[in-house]
Image 1: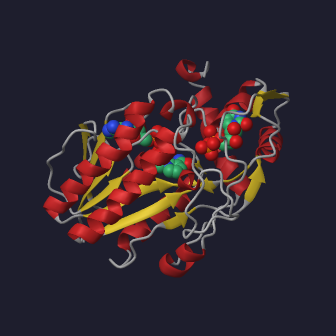
Image 2 (image 1 turned 30 degrees about the vertical axis):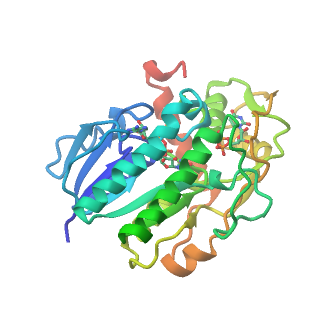
Image 3 (image 1 turned 90 degrees about the vertical axis):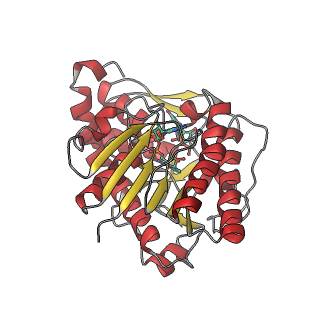
Length: 319
Ligand code: NAD
Ligand code: UDP
């Protein structure tokens, strides 16, 4: 049955993929975005469709619309962008959560929060299970994002306990794929763009830190499964691909897949950069019957093909 669905941050990387899947499924989709990191071009293919609408709006301000479901994705996700205006980043998570939860309370809508593996901080437990409380610096350069997202989770569970809202909280681990901005600043897009342009591949630190990369199509399927789950499945639930690689491994795979001769250069490791990250997805498997199906090299090949088309466009070639 067709539903009225709000996607905040809908013009961003994940949001635009989610809007596309929801529109294709026949739902009435309202995309809300302030374009701080999102782009109109991400949703250009949906503009003009009868079941798609866009509203320029900042979620730190109240929003009055009538909807059945809310996917709350509005927040810059790349460390470079979320650290550029840290106060606004915390506001996007915390004020944004309060406003969207208020909207869910008034309308009775189900609401899903895009939380993050960053809530585990520098994890002392590996891989990370949802029962782990994390190890987060509250006053460092990443704190605006990590603590903002942690507070948003607190708000979701307080609205659940206090107001019986129908909540869903997913903790998303590093996700990549077509649609990322060439200047997004995250590792996969940086390395692919650098490799394709023949520029040096910038490894921060020794490159021994690990991440586990999930292809965007898998992640979006997980979000849809979570929204469709019974109301007692509140989460938090990890969504990510458990295949773990070092940053140096990732650089070497991308060099091989692109056939690039770019040199590898070292840059200083950013403060509080987590040393390891791998999701335990036992809960997602059991409660959502979900697990990623696209392996890293397959996903990277699709992403490289996307960036090749982007970089052949003159306006972006200097990225
Ligand atoms: P993104 O930066 O591409 O998208 C974020 C979108 O939110 C952008 O379109 C941006 O313009 C919009 N936005 C930001 N602040 C806003 C505000 N105050 N009001 C309205 N819109 C606002 O990032 P993404 O990778 O698509 O991430 C989407 C969500 O998923 C974020 O909440 C992020 O924290 C979460 N997440 C993503 C990943 C990942 O690897 N991609 C991992 C963990 C969590
Ligand atoms: N990184 C890197 N070179 C880059 C960008 C990132 O070595 O050009 C590293 C970064 O230090 C981190 C990992 O890649 O250890 C993932 O960084 P990203 O910004 O993608 O996301 P994070 O998981 O840190 O939020």
